[in-house]
Length: 574
Image 1: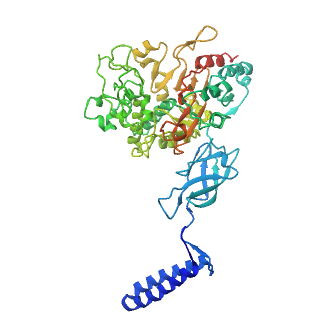
Image 2: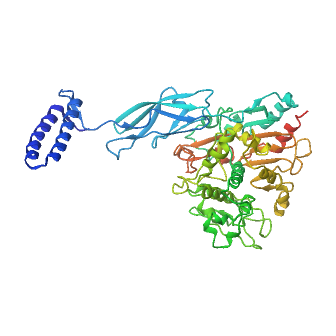
Image 3: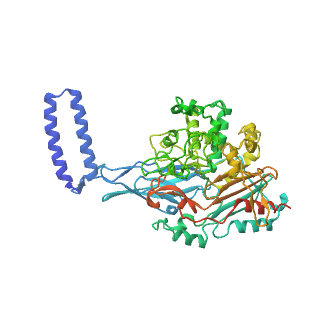
């Protein structure tokens, strides 16, 4: 660091002032003379103040300037806080951010970007503020600033009345036994609950079990630079879970709301009215309902190479899109499959028009239709028209394409993070036929269409999976032989969302009951601190949906079956 004494600096400055004054007085217009004189005097007094009139050294480098606010406000149950910002005189010097103080263990900060996020969602009722010291260093200079994060209370239109199972005609002991099985070591279950007749009657939470932890640690896909307990340890009702493809059902009802509000004409409207890339070829025959029902007729795309996505050359689904920064454009660029042809990605027979083919890309395009129709991202539209109406605090993942939508395409085929109680609010809304406190949030006619999906399920799905129906991004639960030897449930009686790694919102209209289950989860936000899906060779440099076991690529199954769990819960009804 270069230093000069204050006396030396002031002496040179004074001589410079005398010379400048003489020259300016002779040849400079008065206005310019006064302006330059002002600048010289300001410099003089800054130097005098900094030296204190002594012969101390004058430091010509300066400490980092922290321009972040002293206070941040975050809604409860949201993990994103914001970014710390600092400036240094030399813009090429790397700035490193860190936190210290009493609440540092609750907050993660990205050391290079300054992006801050809670490690678990805050709960206003438990803690309404957090205090940390923000530390910034650049080379051999540093600065610190105390910051406070205030947690705002969120009104919750659906507040569960907690009651005993017996109050709704169910057995506590039988429910306890059902949950014991659902939470056994090897199930990878984090959270489950039962709501009957609008009352929360049973719930349970846990972190990773001993056998599961051993499985993770011994897996070749586990990044040993991260800690198992830090990621999947203690869990409670405030801990977030993830949706995976349960998000498709949210996308569905948002389409219904957009139709009701006039942004979209009907389910029969051509998707090409919004996806203009399809308007001048045979893709203009695809309707919005075709996309919702998974029979768009478009080819399945895969990562046949490491550089691009194209028509699958083997029997695989399109989950590969998650390993690319832009997950939307390849979905739009798909071409129509040819009826009567044999394809590697459809092995049941030759492909034909109207066949059901499960496709993440079809749902991804639905999110873009919402964006182009409403001018809002799917998350912003959901916040305004769904989440806020039911008191659901949710965060929706994006891809890593900063040039698309709003700094990244929202993944309308997957990946909403919320608590299991908040996911239950969505299920309750469906169970209430789309209404809450007299407000018809989802058109009742659309709920009726969801209940009618068994009538419209394509024949090829009925042959592939007897007793299963799919439509409008909802399922009916496939019957299975359960522990007592019976087949449960009866075909097309339980409506459900389904997500990878066993994320379920099961809706029993007959018994007025919701049963939910979610697997162990951590939002792995190590790269940027934001929910922007990007995977590298290490967890510590990635942002991804780290559910267990599949989200971590453990290559093992899990001993949980929704039919067994729901059967045990149903048998608890006296």
